[in-house]
Image (tube, rainbow, N blue to C red; front, side, top):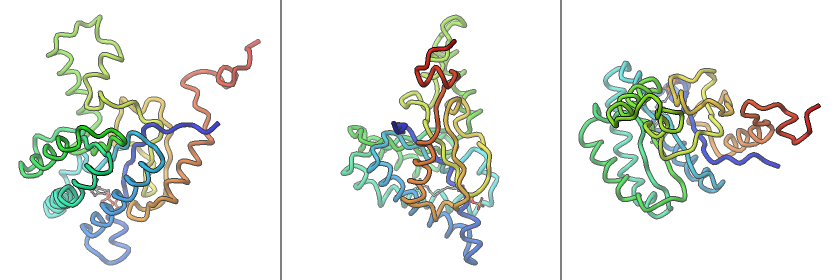
Length: 239
Ligand code: FPP
């Protein structure tokens, strides 16, 4: 039987190289990346995936040239402006994970307005990771746990998961990284413990429905064991 993807997470990499290959500025690559994101959101919904988490801006991305960082913020604002009604109408609920406190207030306001407008939706939970870093999330989670008065004995994996930005979502079943690199880049470090990881050489702006289906087909060939033996998973009695 096919595995079920309830939560798909994506590291969208390769926008810069896509632009460079066409002799275009990097921001054009991010624009094309935003279009690819739009299509993948739609495709995920059609495939009845309930949670989609996109890594749009890492806590390390502040090191990029100022023009590029500002351009990315403008792009995100424009994306929200254009997409908000479609999100509302198509049953998509927007969430963000990460530390938004350093973001421009206009962007934060737009995000707050959109998360509020879509909060009754539940067909697809679209989470955009912004100023996100896995280690930073874990640290903030510890701070939350301490502030909430949890004792050392009470702090187990479930209680700690509830202190993370991702408290409302299941752990990802499948992580896709595009753009040819084979690393996690500080994404969802706690949550990826048993996630299947698919690396694609396709640059993110070229990642389309067919590429998504290839990732899903690969995922369907995996036997998920969560630490058990193949015999246990297949229900074969152990000697
Ligand atoms: C990585 O490509 C991509 C990013 C740092 C930004 C991702 C942003 C988008 C796809 C656009 C906005 C997203 C949404 C959800 C609207 P890179 O620049 O690192 O590429 P490179 O490795 O080829 O240089």
